[in-house]
Length: 145
Image (tube, one colour):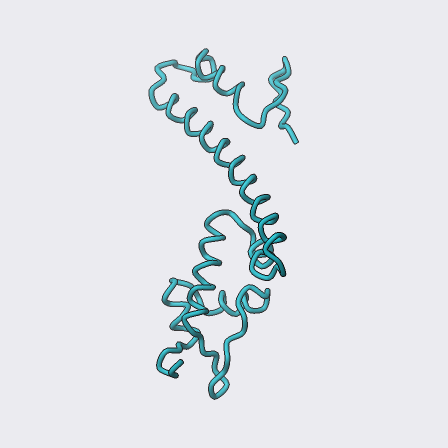
């Protein structure tokens, strides 16, 4: 790769609208392999661009930096698949919760009740929300583990 194909830390950070210290932090955490240095300055390649994009996408999917590091550094495909399957299950659960919340909000936007908490349709939707396994008579909601 020609030296003109590499970029400084500020150029890589700017490409993703990040501060350079974010890339340094990711290097310290083991998410981003340290760049080679030219005259003491970090230089990054197209491989680093792909790695940063991967980190950003994984963060957008709700993965923690530790989870991302685990996926990026795991030694075998089977172990990586297991990690990704666990995260996929978490995402599916979150999507169900988001969908139920969205349905409640959509109902509220059209509900004509003065006190929406007394609306029978709203109450039924709220009581059947995913993740709730026991609605006590005192209106205490106990979240399932």
